[in-house]
Length: 119
Image 1 (cartoon, helix red, strand yellow):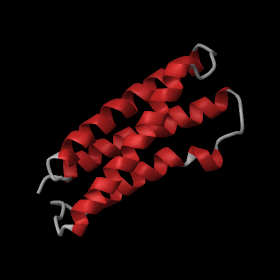
Image 2 (image 1 turned 60 degrees about the horizontal axis):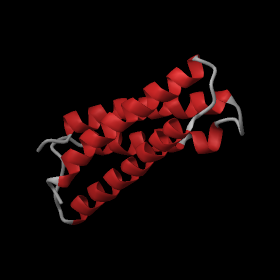
Image 3 (image 1 turned 180 degrees about the horizontal axis):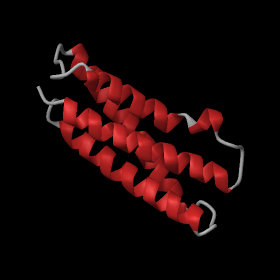
């Protein structure tokens, strides 16, 4: 389980970056959220939930991160990715911008969590 957490972190960062870039590009080109962007954004959120779940399992097994900021960055990353479900407009291109933007910030927070996680 301890070996899965860093690899899942790399996957979270990569997918968040790809989803944010794709969503931002589609918004900039004034296109709607296509199938690929929708699936990338959903995959990013799913990986973030899985990453936090694995982290909680590691905490339950009494394994701690090297820096306590790791927990803050990980939690904020998940919160940032889920925030558009509460605050984004109901429909339209601005909804895509909300999801792409917050997923990009979640990826950046994931980078910080990855950098503070080594014991």
